[in-house]
Image (cartoon, rainbow over all chains, first blue to last red; front, side, top):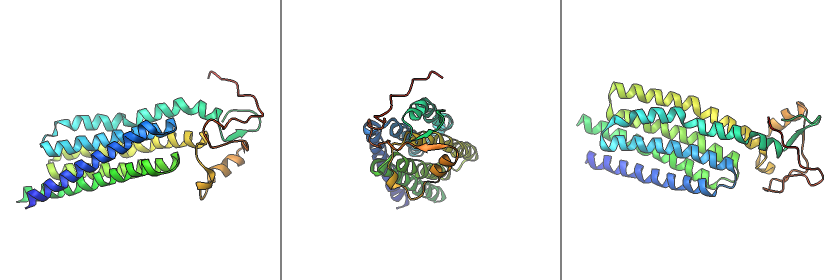
Length: 104
Length: 142
């Protein structure tokens, strides 16, 4: 009985993660601006983290722990670097301007 | 029996975390602009990841695994705000959002106190945000 409940919860988790990854991929391809794509790529990385964790529990094998650690360490660098890359363009199309012509 | 209970509670935590991730993805698809999407993308995502990591820890219940999982949790909590802050700064200044959606906008008051004036000819629609009366700004290589 308990084993069946455990299987049900695990399958529900796998299905929800699949749906979440599909929706995030849709936003990643269709997102109107580059910032949407950065944010959804960030979300996709953490969904991959969750998927690796799920596979660790399902297959009862904790050797993927190192992947989890490294991925959580370097996941934010993509968002940071692309945000830094976009900053001059954002200053060009800025909503706010300084009066004396300096940049933002 | 105890092993099965560990597995069951771990699976419940995993399903809860996956549900929060699903909620974040739904918000990412349905919310109207980039600031709202960032709200949906960061907070449920990190909380769902914490729940899933706790579920792994309960299911495996090994002290070494708990130490690695704690490290992953701390790293995630420390690094998620860094990326979120930078993306939000660029998103606010690029202006690809609608002013009418905001309830309070304290950053614009602070910016106007700091000497920035509102670009009145700004259009939130993409591609039409350059003011027509001015010539395009000079490209700077800095």
